[in-house]
Length: 42
Image (cartoon, rainbow, N blue to C red; front, side):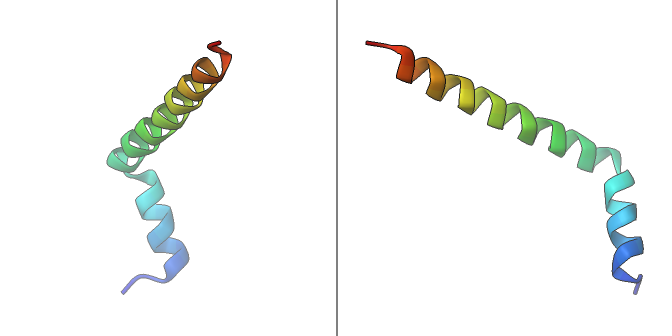
């Protein structure tokens, strides 16, 4: 077993993690834009 800090560091350095992070950020931004667009409609 790795110590937790090392394990987190290894996960954070993984390209898959970065891809998921990017997709998550993108989804949040897209959702926020959708909500703003919905609120701006009459």
